[in-house]
Length: 220
Image (cartoon, rainbow, N blue to C red; front, side):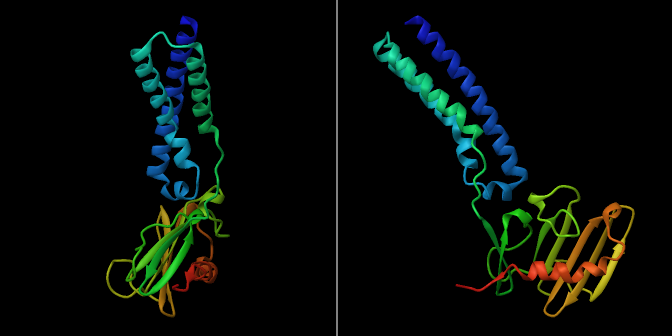
């Protein structure tokens, strides 16, 4: 019986450590990549797996204090439960299809999480939002590798700086290239690292507009 007890508590300690690392990793990912977390149905399961070995250990301790010595069957059942908990961090991603809602004035935009949308307003009256892509082919941020390119759309304002966005303006320095232009009721923006900037950024204005406009959705 003592062998089962030792085996259980060794397994419990290892499982708490393993699931604890999964919890820390999940919290870090959630802090730096919130959209990736929202796009994964099983993230909360992997991150929350730490609760199972803690609860099992506390339950086993309470049982031991109540009616020791415990039956080997109880220790075996506890070990099996711990094994289940240890397997949870290995669960694969399960796509949630999450879309972030941002508003430009009274126009709603539903943006797939893979574009890492940010800086928008989730209620009517918003003025701008940004998304990220990996290249000038506009590959979604979380579906590719390489550059970190930011593009954005605004309801005619200069992205929170006040005033009206310029019709067509590109500025470059040693670090990046920034372009802002206006088309119709909206203004658009492009920001890319200098060493990855295209020779003719204006050639990409229309594709960027088309992508950002495609996020527009009707109000239900």
